[in-house]
Length: 251
Image 1 (cartoon, rainbow, N blue to C red):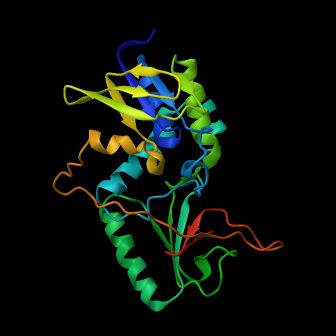
Image 2 (cartoon, one colour):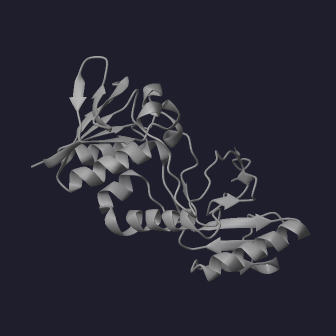
Image 3 (cartoon, rainbow, N blue to C red):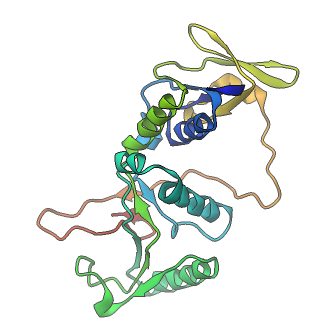
């Protein structure tokens, strides 16, 4: 039975759905509001790579490592299967002397942070990689998921645990009282809340900006949007066995 403070989560991507899932599993009263369909934004359009080598040592790397551990050790097998979790390992490749040196330095820093890596050169390289590749680093911990499946799967499991999942229900406004957010307004009702989690990304309600002020802690990482290009191999060519990153293109 759900007990304790009521939590309203705004946003039905992977962050909102995961927050709702873990709260519901702990018996909390939680309502998830999603403006469209679950995983209808960035969470459903990303590459689905659970990658460590794209992060420098620090807080973001530790968060990525903890995320992988949640997939591997905390999620039930049925949820992993529905998310199409695949412990594929991952590759980063360098095709020029300058990028080879950069990759070597990054690999050394990641190993110092406790990330296991293998270095492949020459005859050690997989046959499906270009002969132009000078160095490839392989991390056996990395994995992939089906992006569009993760949030709906977690939300469905949260609903089974008692969460209230509402698609096509945009949050229109946040109400403050006594210096705290106390309610969320939708088109049809007002939801009292002890806690509100904003997980809507670019679709965060405009009125919410007056309800909070960022307080970066010392040493907190600077966050900025990341973009890139995803490519698929030509038909008839060998398919990659692991996701591969060149620093510019994901394959």
